[in-house]
Length: 531
Image 1 (cartoon, rainbow, N blue to C red):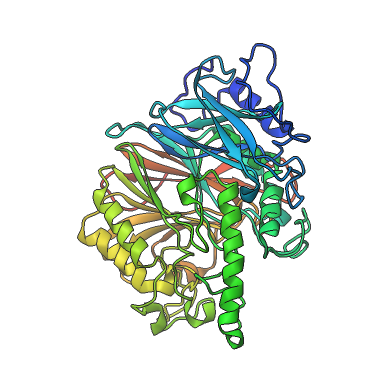
Image 2 (image 1 turned 90 degrees about the vertical axis):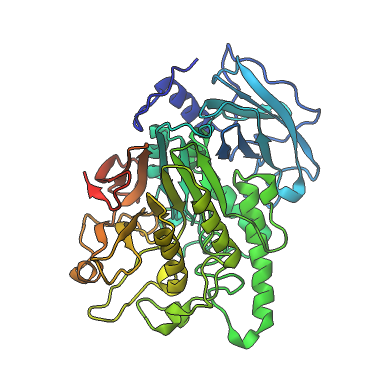
């Protein structure tokens, strides 16, 4: 049995990690001599190797977790190479990676209408505990995955997690995912742009997307499958549970609710109807390929993605969806164009129902840290010299009334230790949060950690200077970097530590990882401090 995990985010149970790494890299494998046999599955042969897309887990609870896989011997084919019939898939979860101590097992039926995916909602597990799992379909056995449940209510262990966003297949290798896997976090938050919708050759030449720009269900399924053929992504999924939320590229760049990026006003309702069909396909494929519970399966064009996860008394995570319910961006979504429409009280980035839910989630929290994983730049982003407020209109700057409502609630209800996690913008940033960003003397309410991309934008550069206008106009900004990577966090009752982990290149494989900058927030003391 694997020795107990240490509290360090860098700890690595090497034997266990190498076993998972080998399985994730090799596709479906039979475990070596000494492994306990998997309980026999229902009759029926499955063609070829059905586990080429690996395994995953997600949305941990103190007593449970979702286990995911997809049967796809020919991942890029419309049907994944599977017969047009349901297939019985057995799963089991154990305390050890050789499955000598199996604690739960069951059967799911992978059906053609769901791309032969499996979403097994396993319950009855121990809190804050490490488990190993695998699947069997016919005679084929999947790679072994590792997962970890959430802490029990009222307990306060240190929680080690990482968050990432923006992985463009064409612009680089997913090396950062492998480094995240080596650090074996308790959980990974993916904040959107898990994949990109563009046609082959549009974004870069490092690797090439399969097919045209995604519009149909078959095209979205094939793109998801292509991304999951990446060995580094498969390894990370097989090493830690994911909590996912989307941004725009999982469907269409910069879309807002049922308004696509290229909205043709002359087409009227026809544009809306066409995009609704596209969004329906995108949401179905997203649910199929993510470790999400069955209750989140989309109905028509709706997929309920915002949700709350409690990690004992250490942290409560309120995961947002800033894309599905928003009104259209002001000023045609133009960069650094400001005006009264940014303050339109009828404009919303969350929708009324999600906004009220967030307030309830923050009010109910009994955890030390109130963490909001979400997609879009939250702080003010002013790149215009002088009194003009500028702003990133696809981010919260375009919905200033929504942001003011969130920060006003945090201020008025005295929500302590408020931290926002952000992706989207392909650079690292660190921001202090105030209700009035133009008045640095006003009360600090929280902090924002913004992760760079996994690959989007290519290698980036070594600069830590976005330009003097950024420093002059944004006194709440404390850090900037344009390399690729992710953010590693360690959270206890006493402090929140964030390490910006970067790689210096992604246009070729094998880049080493390093910590570019670290910040600490002390409990009860708003604002980040550089380490």
